[in-house]
Image (cartoon, rainbow, N blue to C red; front, side, top):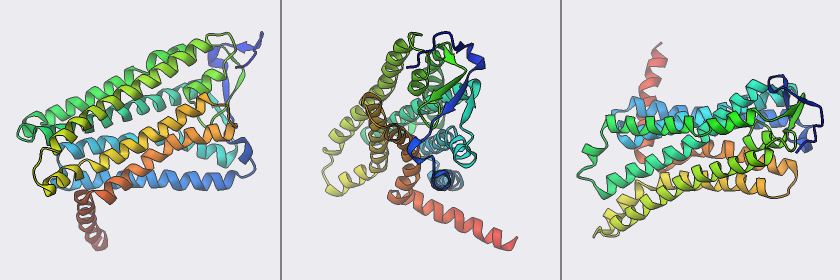
Length: 321
């Protein structure tokens, strides 16, 4: 925390200074090209999935509708943080306005919450498909799918808002240093003046983060517990393998997401070098959005065939033009 004395400023006059990676300040160009490559992979990979699902009628199913939501989410998730990081690495412009910082913070945490919710919805879809196959077409109609997705987005927009408002009312110096590459909630709280409600904000933020992570994780595990019980009742080994194959991609995504978020949480509770702390949180912000398209394209036969079909359909048109 920062000892401000009488140096605190009215919040709108504060400018936040993003510390980035202190140990790598002398190598901004390599960092720029590394993060540019990762961002390009994320955007292209998720756009490929969107084009394949929209362009192939065979993928107009609930599972792929939610996959489209996940792809849109991943593009937005990285776009809230990476472009500013690229500008910081390229031009050394490491300041961000008060409004810009809190807009970035709200967007980042809203999309984090949304990711955990959409993973729950995808687990519920697999539960209905495997445990209630006869009722699946009736329960998972396009209208029901739209309501599930809309509810997840609405809750994700609402949950972080009160904490963001309270954090914006803390006291900061004119140039508050944020030990991060972007405006993460706990990093911004640590940049506030000491004894200005920072301990309460840290505790509240951590409790909300744990709740929106652990409750969805419990729901996902509960769904897959029921799925496992149903699959084990299938007599043929081929039938069990087919049922499990529809879940493996989602399970890998869930594992990647919660592994990276666990590393990010642990980093806040441990005394470690700033660079390692920042890196652990950047991994959380980039790893899952980058791996999701790879997991769904490499392990999902239907998606791979759809990508081939759609792009073979596009290529002749581009050659003719």
